[in-house]
Length: 98
Image (cartoon, one colour):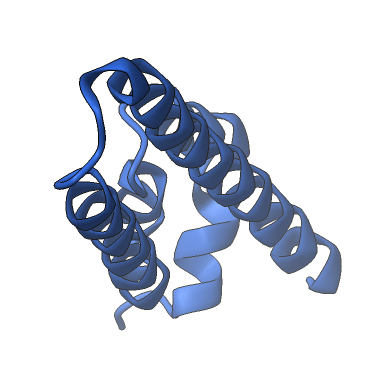
């Protein structure tokens, strides 16, 4: 019999999911946990962030380019931090529920 979604999540190492969501970012820890919905949501948010940055930077002055890049990077770091925290808490929650 195939393992359930909760069994797969409980068997995964929470620290691996956290590290994979931080280091390469963009939800790689969700792939490790086989949480496809969370992965696609994270991918959509990251893509929307890139597109918004590209659209807003079209008419920006060259002096503002460094600031725009910093804001873009901080947004992706924030996304990585949120997904890493959520991935770790998901493992903890499933293990506590039993």
